Length: 138
Image (tube, rainbow, N blue to C red; front, side, top):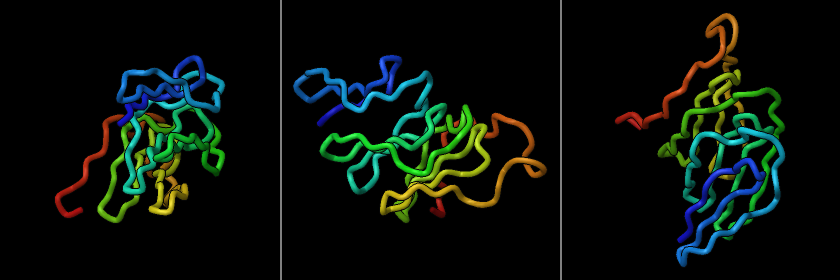
């Protein structure tokens, strides 16, 4: 059992083991405000973080290895709200300033779902700031 915290100003992911040891996981990720929302644990054992100012989705597998997933997503303040694990095994993140809903598939692939949520349907930034919730109908 480990407690994983998101990437801080030092650029490394903070991991606290069940024994209370503190570790910084590699690779270092430069920049500020890279991942702001909490991660979501997938059925595969991977934990996924949606990018805020970072360029890619962050994945930590069950062995503690860190991977940055394609595609590269330009822009800032992309995703702030926590993701939702759906019954189909996919994880969904609602956009803050990004143009599309972010989906992590069961296979661990990153998809940006249609439609584009910018002009004219939803103009402006800061679309969704609260965490998502799974509806009773799944």
